[in-house]
Amino acid sequence: MKKLSIAALVSFLFVVACQRVPLSGRNQLMLVNSKELLPMSFKSYREFLDTNKVDRSGPEVAMVKRVGVRIQKSVEDYLREQGKSEILNGFQWEFNVVESKDVNAFCMPGGKVVFYTGILPICKDEAGVAVVMGHEVAHAIASHGAERMSQGLLSQGLLTAGQVGLGVAMSNKPQETQQLYNTIYGVAAPAATQVGYLLPNSRLQESEADQLGLIFMAKAGYDPQNAVEFWTRMAAKSGGQKPPQFLSTHPADDKRIRDLKSQMSKAEKVYKESM
Image (cartoon, rainbow, N blue to C red; front, top):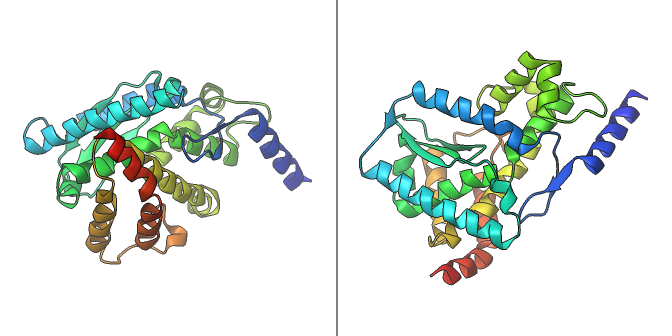
């Protein structure tokens, strides 16, 4: 009976609280309005910058910011053409470079982007930066953070039947809800939750970000073929030292590259139209 009631609740929530991911059209459970995450995102972003060494000048910083502005415009143009400009309501775009050997970059809800200096040699050039920028920005455009927050609120019982919204969860259990947010944006979640529910969707989200990212970089005037070259370099950098795909939040490198190649014709058409 308990399993039946949970299944019924999930079915009900998908009817009353779901939306579609741009381009892929996938239905996603959305118990949290993406806009609700913006104040939390902006605060966390500012705290991150305050506690890390931010590069303020230099050619690499100028390159990241230049690419960021071009990707931002391509996103705005794409969503306007799709009649979905409201997705960007409340966005406050910002592009920063942080000194770190970590090979990483991220975009928090609301367009808050960080590149670690450790990823720039793999990017190699402006087109490589565009690959990463398009991918990371795509996570924010597809509301992947809000989706994962929704999944967590449901799986951890932070929202009960009929309740929807981050504010409700914060009122119910503020400490647990804040911890869930921290988990999604960098702190390890309980292993059982990761393997059983969140990670499979995260791999799907990564693939969607690749697909959207190709379109964003192509529309910004960067040859999408550079995405295959970047992920080939990333695979060589990893040297095979990665966990099995089943326990990974990213698609295996060979699968990712195959998927990108299968999507290339559409992206190439967008690229040619942007010239």
